[in-house]
Length: 190
Image 1 (cartoon, rainbow, N blue to C red):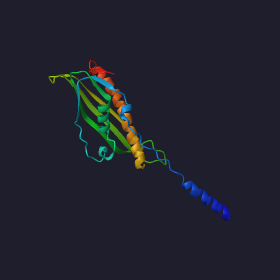
Image 2 (cartoon, rainbow, N blue to C red):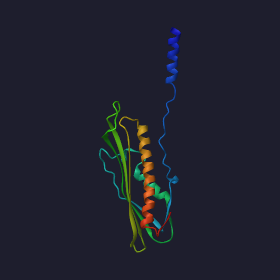
Image 3 (cartoon, one colour):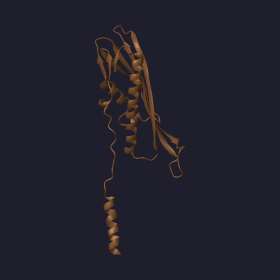
Image 4 (cartoon, one colour):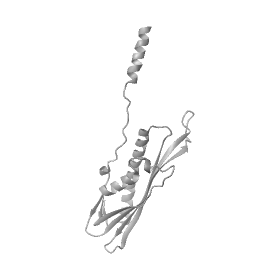
């Protein structure tokens, strides 16, 4: 009997020493996203959005903020060709919020409250000629949301936020290509 108990104890000790699988947060590699070529000589990016410091806004709490990633996408994936005109990109909104909401689909033993993450992009594109005359413009707006359990690890939270940013940028690129092909078709090559 003593040997059996000892064996069970050793088994649980060995089992508890097994490594815990920790998922790495998704790395957002901007260079893998689609490119857009625009017939302009120069590109100017204006960051007009200022984070709102509130209980729900979390831009200042995450290492990869949505505004940094969207600026990086514009710097890497908007290609210019031509020797006239200027593209002005005004980032008007790039907010991400985390709100506690009721879990309306909760079963008997599930959490009654969850977190909802929402990301919103609002960006304006303007093409000016050499005399600063506005030749074409459009506004691109996208949003995406997801939910998570209320009590999760910091690593799980980072994974959720990075996935949200990744898919929001994919949505944004799709909408940008659509809007540019409608309102700036004379200046783009997609």
